[in-house]
Structure formats: C-alpha cells, structure tokens
Image (tube, rainbow, N blue to C red; front, side):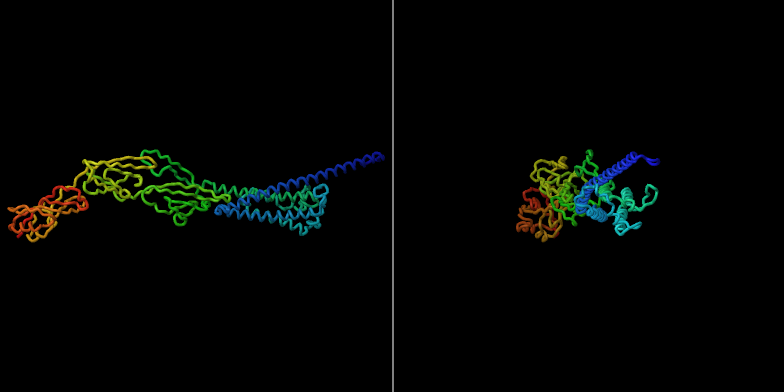
Length: 524
C-alpha cells in the first residue's frame, strides 16, 4: 500500500482495510477482557471451596489435638503459624481487590469489557521509574509470605518449598527482548484492571492451594509416623494361660502399638471384679498401660474393662479381657515313699493335694472321709470307713478341660499303746520306785514312735500284788483298796498294772488296742 501514486479509489480501499483491521483488534480485545473476567470468576469460586476445605481440616486438626495432645498438639501449633502467615497476605490481596472494584460502576461489575483501564494500580504502585509506598507494600507482603512459609516448612517439604519460591518470587524477570524488568512492573504496569484483578485472584488461589497441600502433608506425615512399624512391638496372644506337655500351642504373634503419644484418655479396669485406680494400680508409660497390682493367691485371675480414647470428640472404647494365672512359689520338693501311703483310723490325717500346672481353685478331690481346708490342704478321717484301703480321686480343670487322677491309701489302726507309770514305760523291764511314790503316781498310756501326737486319758486299770486278789481301779491312780494291797507287798517284790483302759482325747468313740501292762519293782 506504500509507494507510487494511488488513485482515489485505491486510497478508499486502503482506508477501509485499516478500519477493518482496527475493528478486528477491538473485538479481540473485548474477547480477551471477557476471558479474564470469566477466569477470575471461576478462580474466585474455586478459592471459596478450597478455603472451606482448609477450614474444615483445621477444625478436625483442632479436635485431634484436643483428643490426643501428645500426638497432634505440636502439629496443630505449626499449622496455626501457617494460617497466620497465609491469612495476612490473603487479606491484603482481598482488600486491594476491593479497592480496585470501587473504581468500577455498580452496573459494570459483571461487564468485563469496560474494565480495561490500568489507572488504579499504575497510580497506586508506580511513579516514573520508582515505586510508590503502595508498590513497596505489595512487594513486602509477598516477601513476608514467601520467607515465612519457607522458614516453617521449606526444609521439611522441599517440593512445596520450590513451589512457594517460584509462585511468590519478586526477583526481576527477563522480557521478550532479553531485558531485565522489575517483577511488579512486568506483572502489573499498564495492564487492564480485569487482567490485574485476575492475577491477584490467581495469587490467592496459589496461597490456598499451598495451604491445602501443606495441611495434607502435615497430617499424612503425622499419620505415617504414627503408623510406622518402628512404633510397634510383637505380642504373644494365646487363648489360655497354660499348656500341658504334648498339647498343640495355638498362640499367635500380634502387633502392638508402643507409641508414647497414643495414650488413652482414661482406663476403666477391674481385677477379679475389684476396681483398679490410676496412679495406684496402673499408670500410662510409653504408650503402655503398666499394671502394679498384687498377683494375688494361687489361681486364675481376670483383668477386664476398657480403654477409652477420644476420636473426633467422641469416646471410642477398646475392650480389655485378659487373664493370668498365679502359682505358689516352690518352697519344698515333693518326696514320697511309695509303700507308705497310709492313713490311720481314729485321727484326722492332714493331706496336701495339688496338681502340677493347675491352680488350687481348679483342683477338686473327693474320697470317703475327705474334707477340704484351704488351698491345697485337706483333712481325712477314715474312722468309720470299712475295709483296708481308700481311694482318693482328683480332677484338675484348665480351660474347661478335665484331667482326672487317683491314688490308693492303706488304712491302718492306731498301734498298741504302752502303759506308763509316772510317765515311764516298762518296756525296758520293771520300773523301780518307792512304795510311797507308787501310791500317788498317775497311770498313763502313750503311743511310742507314732506320727500323731495323741493324748490318751486313762479311765481304769487292774492292780495285782502276788498272793493277793486283783484290785480293779476306776480312774488313773491307786484307790484305797489297791493301796491296802500295796502295803502288804514285800520289799523287792514286783507288782503289776494291767488291763489299762484309755480313750483318745476328743475321740472317745474310737476303741484303742489292748494297752501293754506296767511292772513296778518296790524299792522299799
């Protein structure tokens, strides 16, 4: 169109062409402005959704920190710092956008094609080649956010740190001509209002997106730490507390948490029905509920109750139902003479009955004349049992399974007692004593080398002096008739005490064997 002399017609054609190009450019500019406006609207809606999600996350984190402060309190404190930093920049950008939109007529708020003037930010930020206080404030807010977030999380989450560094850097930028341009000039100087508004909304999107990523990483990191296998130990779980030789051990190895930050809010426990007290009977140590209770008497003991955790502000119960067995400590060996399994009539035979590996309260024994004392102690009285043997049946029970056993004992009568005078027996020959001593001495009976210390009460006897009639005496001392016969005895003569009758103290119904006589040699 340049050069040469143009006809009026050609000049008209050229002019119309220029007008057409200008019209195309004008339409394209309006379309671009509308595109910025629509993008800004979508970003604003997305920001509202992201903000709601972040606030819900923080509310959930606050509940977790209250429920489990050992695990989440420090995490929430750091998240709160990030909220303060992000809210400061977001509020500043929102205020700046509000000031920008005040320059637009109310009727033109949604008419993006008229929002094409750069005057507001150009006037607020720039003065020739220098920045106004408004421009410096904008850069300061950007830098404060970037530096604050990087100092909190840059080393912990490197990828997020790189994203924050790139999105919020205010370093000079190379333009298309290869020249360095200040960041603020490059991004905001001379741009239409709707384009700058969209850029500010995009910065808010980046802020909220970073917050969302950060909060997700914080929770994921904490949960990963809590779920790490380094926080577990192995426990041996078995359906019963004791096994017998030859049985199949059906226990299982399970994982148990030992995280010292996972602590119940409280524990409600009982041992054999007795309520346990925290601080006295148990304590929380290193993620464990450590018991400090007496093992109690021999037998099986039941630990029941629940551990209570707070989860999202609600109580969650973890039931406890375990048992353990207490056995008596070994204090003596079991030694038995196989041929000496004997019980005696007329006495209460003490017995110890137990079964290896079975608590005493799960051992049951029965036999004629057998009665239980306490623990493994029993008493057996076979006075009225006929025959010469008695069988004791014993049954031990563990986990509902019975283990029977039995043993036969011989029944023997009390051995023949020995008569005594003045506590002396005559088995070694006649007892030598003074005539006067015999008159006042007591006649007795005793069981020599017998395992039971039985007291025998003499109720009568016969007294004989050679050449004189036998005198029958009631009681345990010579009567007047016996004393008269004694006076007629000669010095050195031997007198007899025989047919001694005696009863067991406390068991007068039992008939003792015939008691051996006593011979007395008179010393004067």
